[in-house]
Length: 443
Image (tube, rainbow, N blue to C red; front, top):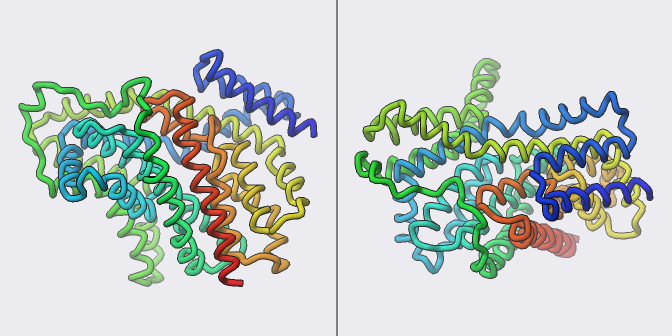
């Protein structure tokens, strides 16, 4: 009981530091994490190792992708490519159905693309449409990000569902089919329908993707719609291509398989995309290499604080893991007299609320829930999806996705809670209800 009280106090202190005392989020994470670690029994000589491990664990997989994505997004915005794509999209879909078009775009892109890559790739497009057509960025952008989030939690080949399929010995094909069925109502309700209530949310500061009305833009050529689409979608197309190759072309050539794994890695794909963008949207249109590098430097400078905040959330997550809190909570919740699917959702959701990471929450809960699946008390495919739904619940100040959304959209913590956090809660709850409905239909 004392441990649970300490967790609640830690989270409340974190929220208080950021919202009431106006402390920088990174410093708040660092201070609260150190205090929590000591109170939860982590030895002082191990606490620094925990901090470093937390930073390395979250930043190791995100830093390069976020930095390269910011560079690509900035050159797409500055060259006018994003504006050209936005014009074509609005012309084809019409302003009335723009939310639905962006939702579909996010869903299609989100299936093969990791969430971090999809986020930084598509956010510049959202803002280009927002500035060009005077539409609220949160109103038109949330449906797309809801789709990205749902695919991240429910649908293979994303890390969490793939790992759970393997752990529970579920059927990848059935899990994918069920996941697609569950994703549709979750995205519709959490995206366009909920998004209608967000028209009045106004950013508290400018987004990093605001395009300046500068005269020097007239000095350069504008890219064609084909080039604009090709550069913007290049990361998506490359990752889809390298994901499908092993299924379309079977070979035992180890060197070929290793080469595919290297080139198809999201970081390498983003490097290729930036190189192509540098030429097609920069050099070919008349910009000098110095001008292009300046654009990239500004992009990286703008996201420096975002990277630190994400690192801070990684520290807090690691303290929760190293102190054994995640496993303790899961063991306590396992004793609840409720349906295995509901129990799986609840355990994963509570851990997600404590550690912030959807993947960590799902995999931590899996170790506790595995005996239930092994004993045949629940369908393994539905258990994967119930936990996927739970991993999207309770997104707040210790979640890296929360801060990505807040900082990129220039929102206050309050507005982020009333938009992003509620959207995540909606897709999580709808996902759970859809899983329970599938259980009734199948059994």
